[in-house]
Image (cartoon, rainbow, N blue to C red):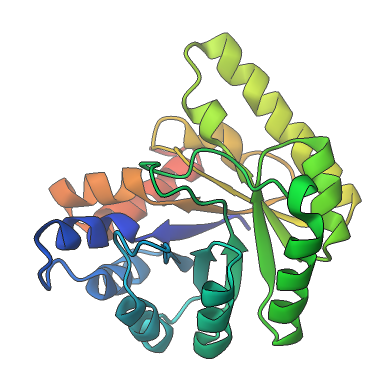
Length: 240
C-alpha cells in the first residue's frame, strides 16, 4: 500500500523566521502522525536554515512511524546520522543559495563518494535512499551504490507549464519506476506534489511512498495539520 511521508521542514522555516521556539516541528510531527502520516521527513541542511540538530534528536525520540533524515553526503551529516540512527536516510543535493532542492543528486558524477556514504550508513543498519531525477543513467548508478531506495524527483512534473508537458514528465517517472524495479531498487517520490497533482504519481506501479511537505504545511496553516494530512491521503487515493 502506498504510504505518505510528511516533510515538516516548513514548520521550522516559520519558527526560524523569528529565531524563537514556535511553531515546534516536533509538535507538528505528532499531529501529522495523528492525521495518518506513515512517516516523518526532515532535511537537516548544512546552513541550518530550518530544521536544527535539536529537532532531529527529539524527532528520533518522538516519531512513532518512521523518521526519514534528508541530508547532503558530507562527513558532518554522516556523523549525525550514525549518532541519531534515523529509520532511513535520503541523500539529496544541496546548494546554499537555492530556495528549495532544485534537482536530483548526480550519482553518476560522484559515484565513488556516494558508494562510500551508502556503505557506511547501511553497515550501521540505516537504509539509504538516493533522491534522483528519473534518468536511466542515474538509476543505474544508484543501483551500483547498493542503496535500498531511490526517491524520484517530481519537480519537473509538478512545475509543468501545461498538461502535455506534465503528461510527458509523468511518463518519464513511470519509466523510471520500471527501470528501478528491474534493478531491485525500491521507489519513493516527492517534490512539488500537491492535492491537485498527486494522484497520477500515486498510481505509478511500484511506488512505495510519497514525501510531501510544502503543500500539506500550507494547508495545515489554515485547517490544521491533522486535517491537512488526512486530506492528502484522500487525494492520493483520488477521493478528494
